Length: 414
Image (cartoon, rainbow, N blue to C red; front, side, top):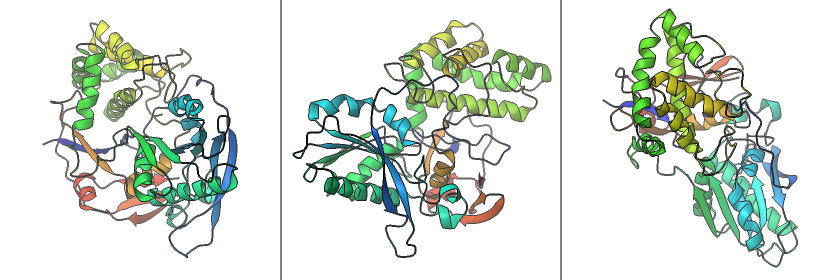
């Protein structure tokens, strides 16, 4: 029996126990991020909250970032980034490819923010208040926003009326870029969908593919690295069974809060699992600070520390410390903080529940991740969404794959 969990390729979501919250996908950066080297103007465009019915006349201001430095008009191209689940400035500052090629193509560069993220909140502070306010957070509505914005740009910017538009996106943004070309072929002539898990839905891709690929990344980083990580799960559990062992782990990893219970040790294991998942995502061949300030080829750097130690857990601690404290400015590591502040974990949790669930699995045999500890019986119940303290069952399992892979869980939006 595979240990089946609901995660995301490139956008992993995991439950870390105890709080009832969907754990945010990405660890919170503690060092200074690299300062943006790109310049742009910040603009806003009024969008309807609902593109597909006449149930509400409400509108909101969608933020977008634009650079026309290289655009000469006369039908020059527009490079259009389909914003994903976070503050658009973060994606703008970390998407160098568009900026690198814009001068060559004399292109206008546009980064459009996804509704319900960053500053593009349809109902301001009440956007996550209840189903009536949050229900317009869908990929379909976001794509319609992008199409309408492109029409506005072409009609309002001199020389852009006949400009071809190419969509760019990464991860969920890459999925949007691909779907944008499919759903709105009159708006874009093509799209570049980077690391876009468009095939990671039920029945399209083997559920273990992502964790197998990540394991290969670490194996290439340094021979034996994946073996050390594979061994660490049992060692971590064993040491965490006693108070003395938990105290040693807390000291070894320089944790901000001590491990007091076996549940805390389980949270730490999940934190490490997310760490290795995220590290593989940002294994860039150059220094970057998308999730954390990191050196070039960070998997190789982390693995060199892991394999250099004769003590498996000490090596794991050294590797985790490099990931979370490469700048040396973190006083301790907080295993309960696992979200980048610029990424909208609440919004993504809603999307994850309602339409973006992509089941993946690990077995501890074909990958370096924890083997199954027990068989999970999934309960076919609607998802309970908590908004501002009030429990409301608003999300029925939308499809068979949800019922098959998602154990009944309560999600809180506060």
